[in-house]
Length: 96
Image (cartoon, rainbow, N blue to C red; front, side, top):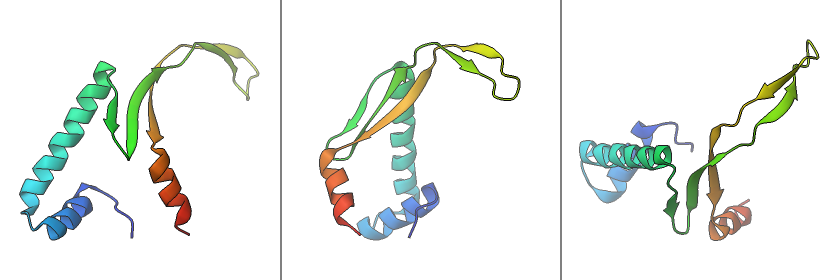
C-alpha cells in the first residue's frame, strides 16, 4: 500500500493511535510547517534513526542547450537534500 497524501497518513495514524483524525491532521500539518520553516532558514532537520533533511548551495556552472548547442551559465541555487539513516537503509534492503 502506498500513502499518497496527508489524508491517508492521517487515517492510518488515527486508526493506530485512536486519536481523532482532526487532531492527527493538525499535528502532521504543524510538523510539516515547522520542517519547512527550518529548511527555509537553512537549518537541518534530523529525525534520529530515520533521515536528515537539509539544504545545500550548488556551485554556478556552465551548461549547454542540447538543441541549439549554445553554452549558458547556470547560477548557484539552494537545493533540498535528504539523507536516510544507515539503520533504515539496512532495514529496507532486508525487505524483498
